Every structure is written in C-alpha cells, then in structure tokens.
Image 1 (spheres, rainbow, N blue to C red):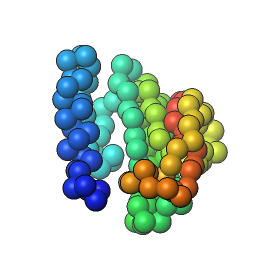
Image 2: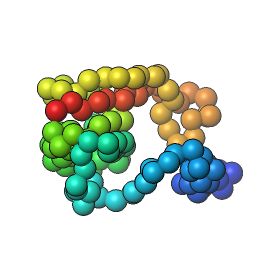
Image 3: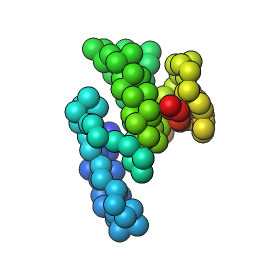
Image 4: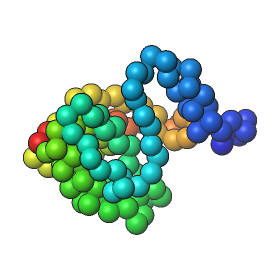
Length: 124
C-alpha cells in the first residue's frame, strides 16, 4: 500500500485480468520457485526474485540455489528471464534489456535514488 491506500498487488492483478484475452495459454504463479518443475521448450519463465544486495528483501533467500534452478530450467529448454539489479556474472547470463528507474514503492517522491534494472536471459 502507499499513502493513498492503493494496493499494488490488486492493481497489478486487475491489469493482468484485462489483458488476459490477449495472452493465449499463459498461466501465472506466485509460489516458491523450487516447486515449479516440468518446464521445457515452449515454456517461458519470468522470475522477479529478491534483488541481490537488497537486504530488506533478500534475507534468507538462497541466491545461489535460485541461480542453479534457473540454469536447470534453461538446460531443459525453457526460456528463462530474470529481473535483477546486478548481473551475477555467471556463464550464460546475458543482459537483454536495461533501464534506469527510481527505486522505491513510492517512486513519485522527490529524491528517490535511481538504479539500472536489468532483464537477464539465462542460456543453457
């Protein structure tokens, strides 16, 4: 929520609901990545994990285990895309898009820092 009582998750869900008819056979899941298996050619994984180095969100998150999971899905033939602020520098992780943006839930407030957000493709 922000100060106007806006619930970002609800807003996002409504926007996706409106676009669903254009998305064909897409399915969305918000769950532990380790529970998702059986992905191969024709599957696309977009992962938005806790960003490396953002202690508030990444405490207790095993970044190395997550990276290994992404690499295993790519080896199975799935297209794997990961949103991150830092390229982990692992073999096969390539930046396919980047954009500088304000970092915060309420990014409209003046003085918010900017960072470059990356979209990385994980190649097998």
